[in-house]
Length: 486
Image (tube, rainbow, N blue to C red; front, side, top):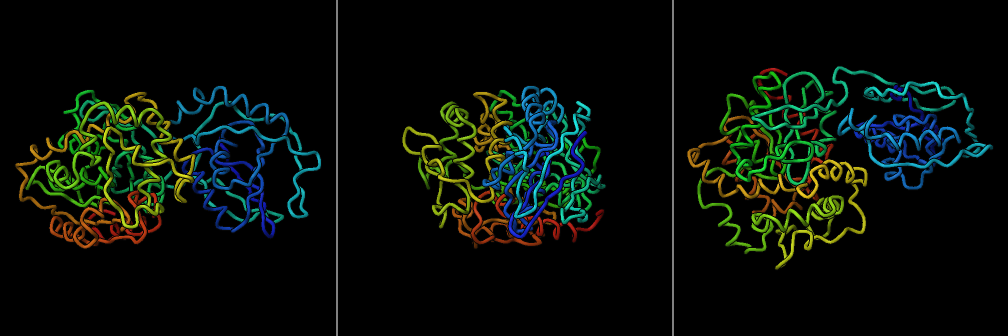
């Protein structure tokens, strides 16, 4: 049975957490909840050996590095057994949900854990739980418990918890994360990302009364990778969005895209306004068909070293990025973050002669504040399933840029005729290519029904991950003012 109660025992300056959640979503919720009390988390006490009592501990230790994990001797033994069949009993049944990492609890001292004069002692009652895991419900802050502890009680809200399924669309099996009921909102990630890039948006949007779906797009993470480079054209990608809406039994959707997900969202809205109720783009503004082929423009402006030109060449980038997925994510996510001083102001990514993108992005001394090692583990674990082709699917999107220009020729002169929202960051290299003012003018010209266009100061490329609260507020306000179903 999944953990149904967590307790935080606080004193004036510190606190002990009794048990942890086990899903990525709930670990973030609990971490924010603990931080809201402005206490120093000194210890995590594990009451039970089953993973749903402690899988979230490694991520919480990343966030609160001074904390120590304790359990009784018998519980510690059972924890190690859970490591042995974690994949078969948990990860295979709950793909994309289990928080990664291992722990090796210290045995709680006989005298207990001293908490500024209050002593927490353990009483061994034996093993009284089922060995069959079931999904955990959403956890919400509850009422105070006797003695000053603050309890979290389980509540199955209308929006439920994130469900992970696979949907076959246009012959390609897509992994989909879904939560909530109501009008459909589809969240489209970019490169190199996955559904997990929307971890801070799925819950709040679902709680506001929307059916939220975040797929791993074609070629990414847990979704299938077609072999042919030509299978990643913008027509295939927009076709996947329309096919997904249909497969979900819906007639329409609001699309929200970031990075590469934004061009997919913009293009789908332009071509199928009968299906797309509204569209929001993060980072990348709409680039309408016409003019010179994009590779010709970037090659002339930045040379062969521009990363998008470098990605056109099969082989080298694929191998370099896949060699160590965790290092790749650390470097790219940190390198394009607004926390990186090199992005003030932002400049283009230039690959050195004979090198790869990673040669232009040093290993960070520390992760940015919005990113944890647990987040890196999720991205790297999902990509690692594809082995030496871990990034090939995403790279193939770049290898279709010129083909997309050719395929969309029939849409030259077409505008985006649905309500639109745009959010960027002034430390995003995408914004740096044109400048904030020119970027906003581009959006206004392409989307006459633009509701709002804004640039977030100090924000880098990973808009919704770096600034989740601001992005969520804008998305919810945008959705609330749309006509039609809510």
